[in-house]
Length: 370
Image 1 (tube, one colour):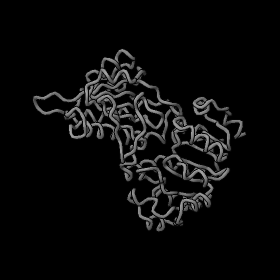
Image 2 (cartoon, one colour; image 1 turned 90 degrees about the vertical axis):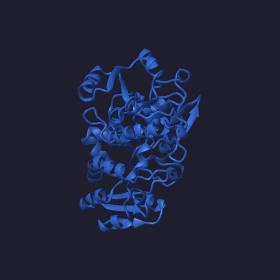
Image 3 (cartoon, one colour; image 1 turned 60 degrees about the vertical axis):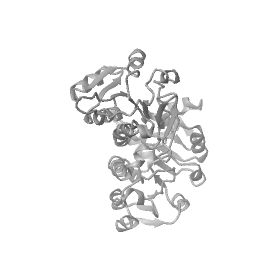
Image 4 (cartoon, helix red, strand yellow; image 1 turned 120 degrees about the vertical axis):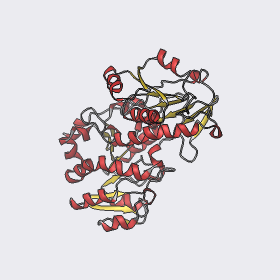
């Protein structure tokens, strides 16, 4: 199979779809890999590193799409790429369709096969979302700590305090991968952390594994409204796979927060779990609303592209090899995890939550695979 690795052109996106090591594994399995020149530079991978393992370098984004049967990316195609996508071409990347009607309709019109990293599901886990959730969760605390500094407009508190001075209060919504990583980082810096979830089994697990300065708490409106009044940093990580994130903090809640409180919305790719969040970029990452700082960068892991690219390739390569070795249809027939990754196929929406988000007709993917 001819596999294309384009350079990401979403603003401030520095990751690349596959490392040289991943490309080498694809080539050793008998496939041709075409890499756009400069695609890996911002992640720390020079063109010669790809060429050394047998990749073919191409000059333009258009050439990658024109040549490849399968495109491996990191982020969803942006508008400039829409015209290059070909019918029946397999796109393997993060899409987060539920947050963008324009992208959804563009991919329907393209007649391509859109297999989304974020909905590949195996053993009730999301293996291709986990590595980026780990990165984003850890970054959420890091970025939140920075914007709590007074020169950034924040409350002016050090997360861990110092001897004789109380530490900051950090509130984490969602006890999944990203939330757990955020809580670990915040607790490691010495903050008092409250982590919310509505799954009692998960809360019991967190109680067992977290340090004493982390308090797991059941998620409901009463508890959330009480906690936000004393929290300096609030991190939202709640995820419903393939669907829009629930709005757990509303505009009205901002009035009950301390001025200079920082909100970090890790769920912004899926629409965000704060009502007042709006997507931002690394170039202009924050918005201030009613004295509350909102950080809602849609590609947080793109700020640490070397770490993120290696972590993503480690997780995605086995699935990419199945798709390349067997073709997308057979691979999805034989692997339910990959089948769940199908979102749009040849103009048909085959992921229920995406169809529901935009009132589109839903077609079960099984009917397409048979």
